Image 1 (cartoon, rainbow, N blue to C red):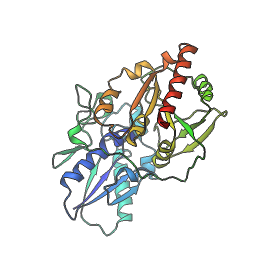
Image 2: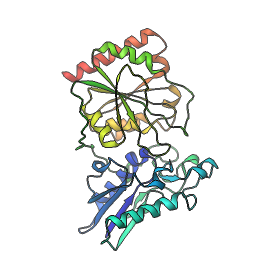
Image 3: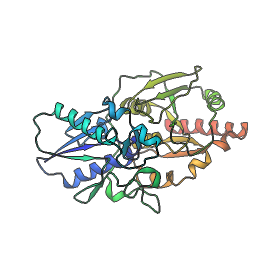
Image 4: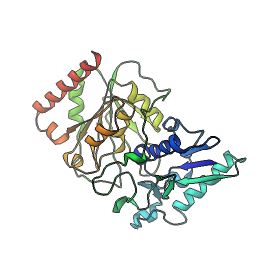
Length: 335
């Protein structure tokens, strides 16, 4: 049997749920002769090392213009009407699915029998669950987090250290990589981070500070944008380039605004620590289970290291302590 696993939702749920679900099924239930096809965004090929074929769907207009929520996407009209359903109108989720099917058939015209597994549906194959049966604003019933204790269902996932990413983007001298994340429609904190003072003090480390502007081009995806011309900035639009920059950095310092964003999970998945600067109210949210992920999933050499933004900027003494801590951290990596 040929299986076509197709992801159309938010990137975060693909990284820390969907790919783990499929790997779990592949390791335990894939039979000789079975083939796995993955349809997803640009630059994620190496996340699915077990796949037989990968199809980039980023250019499909209905997908690109939709708004992701959890493991699904809906059209802008239904989103603005607060029509929070797993699949919206014929111009929304259903059109995305049909457009992807048409594109797939163009690329693989000789494949006649296959099973579609869309992230916008609730599916179960051999006891491994995929997708969800409930839209994001009211909480997932079968999504990434269990209902009560808000932890990933480890029995339904298999994770590995993500590697083998190659990018034409090269930075010749050592650097610290900074990235932030903002999403227009999802804001669960009113704290606005002022980067300038932190960046000014990071210069004292005597190492290149590299800012990452990241934007996939998909409507309402979270994005990174600094607008600080004093520092070198690299722009990229896909996971492959982002991971390559993270992998080659001396250290990663990531900000997050409005929510505990998915970019914070990327460095630990490739074995790198990530220093997280976040408002306190975001770190207090149940959707930021840092200890759980550090203890149960991130066993590849990298951890999440949170810093409370309000405490950091409270005084210059606190900033000085932070800069000294980063300096000691960099020195420890050399020893």
